[in-house]
Length: 246
Image (tube, rainbow, N blue to C red; front, side, top):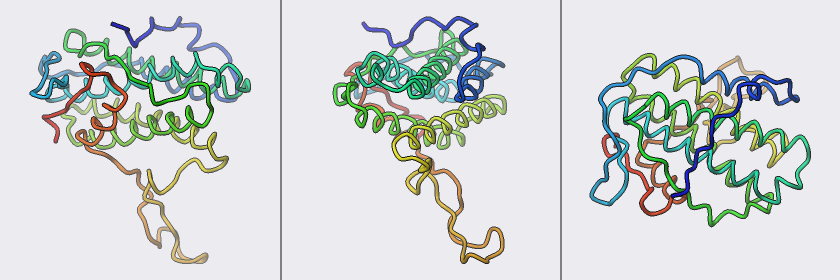
C-alpha cells in the first residue's frame, strides 16, 4: 500500500530563514507544540459500507482531522512532483513548499497524538486532478483548503476537551490562511468570497460600524458533508465515515 505520509522534515527546515511567505511556515510549525487530551481508544473499524469509521468522542474527531490532513499532505506531495510546480515561479514554489510542510506537520502531529488509536494510512485517488496544469492544481488546492476550514469549524461542537478545542482552533487558523493564499493565487486580491464566509455588507457608505447585512463569519460543514467530499479523492478501502457525528 502506498503510504501518504513522508518522514518528518528536519527541524532546521522548520526554522530556516525564508521568503516573504515564511510566516506561514512558522505558524504551521507551531502546531507541533503542546499536547492533546484523548478520550477513549477507538481504533479504525469499518462500517456497513466498508468505510473506515473515525470513531467516537474526541478520538473520533482527531481521527477525522487526521484523515483530512493525510489527504491534504498527499495532495501537496503530488503537486511538487508535477510539471506545474516544476515550471512555477520561485514565489509559487515557496508557497507550495510551505503548504506541503504545514500539512505534513499537521498529519504527523495528529498521528503521534493519537498513537495506537490512529486510523491507518489512507490511499488517495487524485486521478481527476491534472498536476501538470496550473488551473487544475489551484482549483483542487482551493477545494481541499476550503473543505479543511469548513470541517474544523463544523467539528468544534463535538470536541469535549478544552485543550483539544484550543488546538483545533489553532490549526483551523492556519488552514484559513492557506485557503486565502490559494484564492489569492487564483485571482489576485480575491482571498475570500461568499461561498466560504457570510460576507458583511454595510447598509451604506456612511453607516455605523456593524450596521449592515451578513455576519462576516466563516461557513462550516458537518462531518457527514465533509466525508462525502473527501471520499471523492480516496480509493476504495480508504474511504471514511464519521457516523457518530451526524
